[in-house]
Image (cartoon, rainbow, N blue to C red):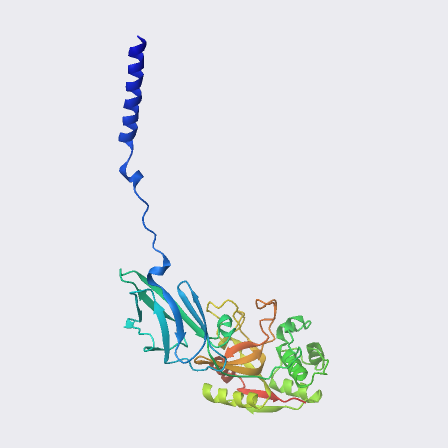
Length: 337
């Protein structure tokens, strides 16, 4: 009996094992699928013929930092190497190392295709500075001017008392006086209180009266009837070392709509009104021209470094013209004392 039981047990174990094997699905024993690595369509080195920019090669990106003195990055020839057997194109045109020219002033893509047909797009970005791209201005500074002062002369109208919402005039006048004379200790409330009978928004004539009464020389100038003429007039004053107070409809200045991580260009608030700002510099970046302004509108707006968003803001010359042409189309010029 014991022998029969032993044979039965062995037969049971055998049948159970066969059943387990039969129930195993073929796909459970498949080898893992091969992993495609980044090296299959890779830019392995990159440079610019005849120049020595700093080159950063990252996955899917080539970043170039040219010297500040390089203001023209068009028609440059790249020197590069690729994964063996791979080819590069830009907008469908084959790229040949040491031969093909491209415009590096705007970001573009190298499309890399390997021998098996695998495709990878590499973004190429170039600049001649470390800040304009982050600020939303562009990549290549072509020309610039700044009449900034080495001390604080920016004032925020939000902290100027009962008339703060309309104190852009007194605040801009105070900024101009502080810029012209570092020893000036007045604040916007002093300028506002100097005209107790005026409890409304200032005009250009009130600004002039304020500067005259506080003994700061000034000139009134007329602006142009086109954007280009207004740009030339304002640029000439800035090139002469002056600053300029303008009255404009701020709604004509576009609001920023880009993706820069720390935008310092275009209008930073939704409000639209007649408004005084102080122009003290400019930058020509890529194909755009910006005036640099101290905009007194504060109310909690800050850059990433917690500096006021209105201090050193960049407004496009076309927008400055559009905002001024519908009002007095004039400006006040101030020189250093």
